[in-house]
Amino acid sequence: MSMKNIVQTIGLFVLLFAMQIMYAENPRAIKLETPKRPAGQTDVLKLACDPIPTVRVAFIGLGNRGSGAVYRFMSLEGVEVKALCDVVPEKVERAQNTLKKNKHQPADIYTNKNDWKKVCERDDIDLVYICTPWLAHTPMAVYAMKQGKHVAVEVPAAMSVSECWDLVNTAEQTRRHCMMLENCCYDFFEMATLNMAQQGKFGDIVHGEGAYIHDLRSSNFDKDAYYNMWRLDYNAKHTGNLYPTHGLGPICQIMNIHRGDKMNYLVSVSSDQKGMTQYAENKFGKDSKQAKGNYARGDMNTTIIRTEKGKTIMVQHDVTSPRPYSRLHTVSGTKGYCQKYPMEGLAFDPDAHGFLNDEQRKQVLAEYEHPITKEVGEKARKVGGHGGMDFIMDYRLIYCLRNGLPLDQDVYDAAEWSCLTELTELSVKNGSIPVEIPDFTRGAWNKLQGLTFAE
Image (tube, rainbow, N blue to C red):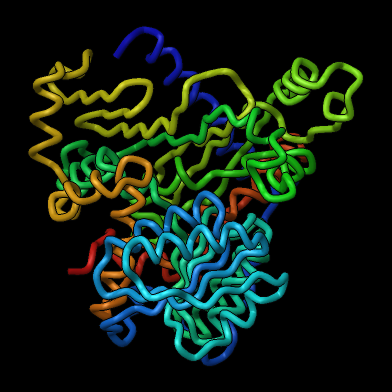
């Protein structure tokens, strides 16, 4: 480990020690009440439903994510696309053409504002696949489950703690699957390091890091990039970590969150906002409405989490700085270390002061390649979707539904990872004080011992 990394690590643990004192002794720490589970409602840990030999699917939202999903589904066995829904008719037509080109039966189309409800109410649909703007995710997912449908919903699945509880309660009441479409959990490096962690290659894991660092300034100010510029609007009104799940999800899986451990509390801090304003000034002029707009979200948000078992997680969010894409994906244990960005690196005792060379790294990654990527990785690379991880995610979703198996990600994952959108904002707005992270399993976080993938 370099001297720079040593200094950073020491600084981090000093901050974490201070966090513990603040959380334990600070009367201003925000502690959220866990609502009592309604009578007759039980958890959905390892939920298994009746097998569905042919999964009948409806897609709601056919922008970049939704249209990509329709394309990937053309390479899956045992699916029928029954309905396509979007308020932009051209997007529905594009998806319909994808079905036609791949010799699938045409789907019924829906283009009116509230047609999504009609889609959920149909009795010939098993799975509703939601790829709409963020604020529509939870209302649509809840309504679909109440109509007896399984749900796959884009990230974040919810934008508030209240919405997270809505997802959890509805899934428990209806006994329907609710999977957040966290594709980064299925990337090849993340799955290999998950396999390493589960086999003890890193020893006792004490710290992990994830991020979403992605320069989206041009997209946020492009009226054609996001419908009605919804993402810019949300960035203008909210601060904290608006998009935590890409970096957090894989780390939570490695740390067995709600499968033997749980996240207890967080502290979040944001930098000043500079990037949006300066970009708008350069693109539209200093006197433009874009340049004079108020943007609440600080450029860089850094959040630190402590778990019940004493592990720590750092999560970062920055979509307005001119810097290379990164999700960090850092895992630090008593026997080894890995990172994905800015370069893939592995280091293990007894010589962990430097990374393995390229040949050694490739050998270890090959040795610990996850069984799922071994099974479907070649096809995933051909079909694509962020290098293939999107296809692996869809493949596993459909495989589990067809075989009546528990899903790889459950509604508690969706709630735990998504709740940071509100909790980080609470911390930032209150002077970066500690904020409790709810236990969405209501005490069942230690019921399972480790993440498993059903076969």
